[in-house]
Length: 119
Image 1 (spheres, rainbow, N blue to C red):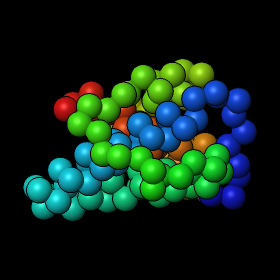
Image 2: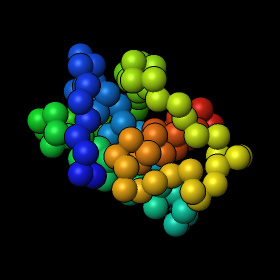
Image 3: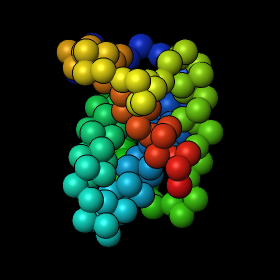
Image 4: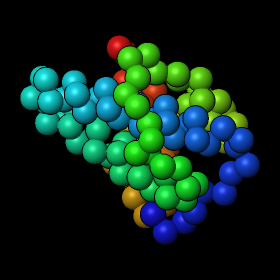
């Protein structure tokens, strides 16, 4: 991800923590179900979290696992940045340009959204 996220969203630590907690839940579920597809989605989310953790200087090591995840910062972030989530029922391979940071972020946050709404 060569581009940087330039955002004045004032709840970045909360957003990063929420996405990280979603990763933990998905990762645990993928391990319990031995689901490789879910594991790949979890790793995609983790890579995104590690990228923004560095960019916004948030230390994930101080976070503790949460039973209930606060999804509000995720929804606020998506709204604040006018991120239009993908429709996975209509997505085409050409819709996501992996060289563009915004496309990758949109792809990751779409997964986060869909997964958190299913469970």
